[in-house]
Amino acid sequence: MRALTWHGRHDVRVDTVPDPEIVNPRDVIIKITSTAICGSDLHLFDGYIPTMRAGDILGHENMGEVVEVGAKSPLKKGQRVVIPFTVSCGSCYFCGKQQFSACDNSNPATTSDMSETLYGYPMGGAFGYAHLTGGYAGGQAEYLRVPYSDVGPVVIPDGISDDQVLFLSDILPTGWMAAENAEIEPGDTVAVWGCGPVGLFAIQSAFLMGAHRVIAIDHFPRRLELAKQLGAEILHFREVNVREALWEMTGGIGPDACIDCVGMEAHGLGIDNILDTVKAHTFLGTDRPAAFRQAILSCRKGGRVSVPGVYGGMMDKFPIGAFMEKGLTMKTGQTHVQKYTGQLLRMIEEGKIDTTFMISHHASLEDGPDMYRHWHDHQDTYTKIILKPGLEKGAVQTQQEKIHEPA
Amino acid sequence: MAGFLLSGDNQGRDGDTLQRTLIGAAAVAAAAGVALYVGRKLSGAPEGPLLSDAPASTLRGGRKPDPALVGRTVTINRSAQELYDFWRNFENLTQFMDNVRSVETLDGGRSHWTIAGPAGTEVKFVSRITEDQPGRVIAWESEEGADVRNTGRIEFIDAAPGRGTMVRATITYDPPAGAIGRAVAKVLQREPNVQARRDLRRFKQLMETGEVTSSASPSGRRSEDPTKQYL
Ligand SMILES: NC(=O)c1ccc[n+]([C@@H]2O[C@H](COP(=O)([O-])OP(=O)(O)OC[C@H]3O[C@@H](n4cnc5c(N)ncnc54)[C@H](O)[C@@H]3O)[C@@H](O)[C@H]2O)c1
Ligand SMILES: [Zn+2]
Ligand SMILES: [Zn+2]
Image (cartoon, rainbow over all chains, first blue to last red):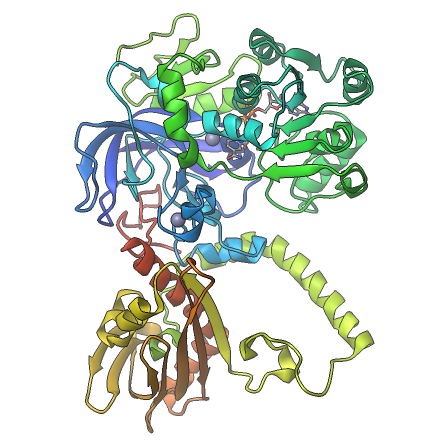
């Protein structure tokens, strides 16, 4: 089959690779119909995530049609399914608590050693995301092997398009859990750093959970515009002093909750960020947490900080004083996708959540390497890219001209 | 049982690459090590009776009763009896112990083990049960003449109500005799604890999910088979 493979920093290729096969009884194989590129893939593209191996297949936001079924899978050939990016067994202590991304069994015994060394305990598995999380092939390919198919896959009823439900695989539950972790109360003002797909879903979710105001921060006009369409007030961080602006806009109280939807590769020209960038490139540091620091410093006393943005290693200059003295609460984590998919699918069916507004491009798998470059270099106009193995090479559709194919 | 103290040569071929990627973490750990060393120099290791309630395998260097002692505990979401029963049927152990080729039950609590050694070799020995408390403990020791003399103990300890069972493995091994023994020892001394923790982890996977977890999948690496687990 054809697949997008990682070969090093800024080096993604289309390769011909073997087809996946059923390995364990609970597996299925799906034929991919849609697979998106995520902000998390940028961290891989930029070489910020350790334990990638040349030749790894990318892609963790996947959906498709079941084409092969293991002996113990309840799924049937022909079913359309969305696949959570988290691989979860459904029967360990953590899955039992619905902390699916912490699954204790989905990371194979040999690879789980690495995260045990780095983080103290083995991490759960994930598709297309380095060997730290198991080394499962991703779905930016024609076919995908899905383990524990009785736990993860969301069966999609007829009459709903791929575009409407694909993001159940990651960014929609991620934005939702980010807002849930912000513990929003009526009257709250919520500040959201980053208006990428995760930030945009966090904004929408925050309003659905009763936020009075949302203030969104980024530096890409198109992304800020999308945030504004959702009802947020916006801040261009190169135009304004963000902390002063938040003080003024909240009358000196500060945002009740702050959500970091940026992660380890924050942009910006703050002195701290320049130092962090130098350190990351000389391997003296691992993360560039400028937005994270700003969120902690901006948050009101007794407020909540929610961190869906991904971090991987050690952080310099964590403002522990501000965090402690103000009595903040922080919640974070890889999303427990399986916990939210049922509820969010219902909301999509009822038209309560708009899941397609941020899609800017559809493209073929063959155009994948170009799409990675655009996703990296032209974030303003490329707000979300969906790859469709069914499309011909060169058949790139932009938002205006994209075809909403019937289900 | 004794199988998992023997680490074979079937580690992933990219172990080195991975190790390199973890060098950063290792550097931090090294710095922490220096700090610890200096700290200990300054404070001095405590003497007198042990105060800690932890298993002996967690004791620091000088206080360990036997330097070759390895221990590991995992919690498994199943009853102690169920786990004991599965384990006590030694033929089952090949399902999750990577390097155990076969186990054959003999009479008198004895069993014959064949284990994959380094470079395609095989290590064989007879093991004898020294303690057997149904639902609680199984302990063994190798019989005279084993290439690698070893003793081990598996305890099944109830976790908090509703949280399954803590399975604790404690193993010691003696410096082996003979050429194969020396070769095995070389591998052994590097990672008996790694083998033990991976085997226990696979045991947990099998008991909780009915499968040994595998991320086997295709990749652009020509030499790899998409149905096999690498690394
Ligand atoms: N927790 C999870 O399970 C999970 C799941 C998916 C994605 N993520 C992470 O969420 C983060 C966002 O994902 P995405 O797909 O939206 O990524 P993205 O790269 O499309 O969006 C990030 C946005 O942050 C903006 N930004 C950069 N620096 C900023 C700063 N200093 N202040 C304000 N905004 C800034 C960028 O301009 C960009 O628009 C990433 O770190 C991603 O890895 C986490
Ligand atoms: Zn993602
Ligand atoms: Zn689990």
